[in-house]
Length: 124
Image 1 (cartoon, rainbow, N blue to C red):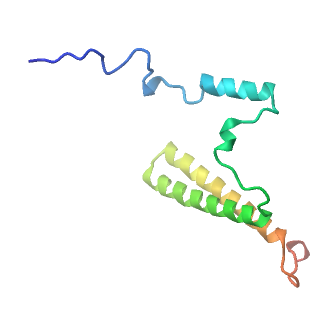
Image 2: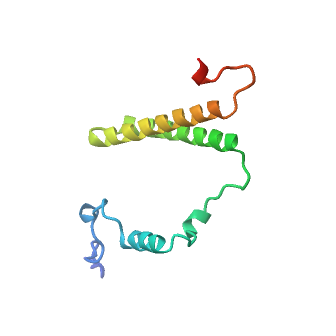
Image 3: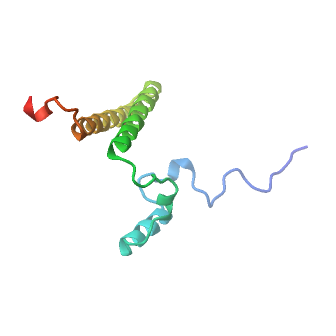
């Protein structure tokens, strides 16, 4: 006996993955950005999901940023090893940006507070 399904697997209302334009922002994003541009003083509700405690010292923030970028570096390198072609190149570009960010944060940490008696980079 053949069973008929009331709903076909492909609904005409839902676009297939092949037809979705990933470079075109969704209507929700466009509305959110437009509202933010009209009223820049309005708080962004999404920004309250992840917060940083007030009065955290700059060195701690930079140390955590450095660790985050190092983790991103490892994850994007692992991902690039599993990919081929243009997708691999994108993953490697992300990895290179993570390394660049990590280098910048490390330099900022170096410049932040040099121990007494050590010359700064500009004096070398």
